[in-house]
Structures are given as structure tokens and as C-alpha cells.
Image (spheres, rainbow, N blue to C red):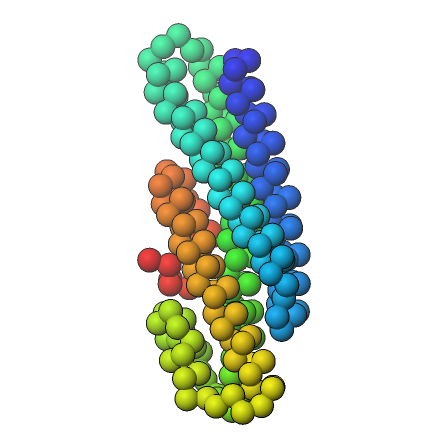
Length: 208
């Protein structure tokens, strides 16, 4: 049991670490959204945080799956029913906490995407281009903002700044799409996904 509880402690600490990273991600999102052209350093820091979350989450997922797989051996082995029940309870608590933290991360990513999309819409209005939500989604899915900006003449500094921000926000969203999709795949790979899919990764049905 000592080895098991050591694993439990490792998973608990790693999950707490992700929770801290998520708070930092939210702060960076706010900074990026409040500045027309945020410093590259902030975006690099955000990328690093997202990378750490992904790496740590994958390790936690692997450990949880390993523990779950060990239950079958325990049932056919010499584990007492009390011992096994303790292990299952611990695994359930850890899994729920992990899903809770990753759901919060997914919600932060989705909110950032929606608010970034809103910024693009406002900047397009500055250039004299009015777009619907569907048209914006079309632009995002095309992978290039030039679908709507190609015929805009940057004849003033304001228009040029708006076009620069549109391009920058579009790149942010492209990275987000990848992150949200990877998160969805992570939960699909876990047995608990069936129970959590209505809560987590519910990106408007857009994640494929």
C-alpha cells in the first residue's frame, strides 16, 4: 500500500500544479485580451504554460490508467476487499479532481477563444467590414484572415493597426483550436470521458 499511496500523493501534487498553471493561463489571457498588440514575451509564457499543462496532464492520465488496470490483477490476487475498496475510492477521488481541473482549463481556453473572436469582429468593424458570427467562423476554419481582409486597403494607421491585430488574434485562435482538440482527445481516451463529456470539452460541437 505504501507504493500506492506514494502514487496517490504524486498525482495529487501534479493535479495541484496544473491548477496553479491554469490560474496563470487565465492571467495571461486577460493581459493578451486587454492589449492591442501584447508583448511576445507574454505569448511565449502562455505557450510554455500550455505545454506544461499538456505534459503534466498526460503523465497524470497515464498513472490513473495504470492504477485502474491494476484493479483487475488485484481482484484475482490476494488483495482484501477492504484494501481494494480503498484503492478504488482513492482512484475515483483523484480522477474526479483531475477532470475538474482540466474542465476549468478547457473553459478558460474556450472563453479566450470567444473573446479573441470578439476582438477580431470589432477590429473588422474599424476597417469598415461588418461580419456575422457564421462568417467569422468561416474565416477561422479557412485558416487565413485574408478571406475578409484581402480587399481592405490599409490607407490609415488605424486600419493598419486593426489589420495587424486581426492577424495576431487569428494566430492565437489557431493555436487554441489545436489545444482544445488535444484536450478533447485526451478525455476520449479515458474511460471517464463518457461521464464527463457533457461537462468538459463542450466546445459548441465544433471539436471533431
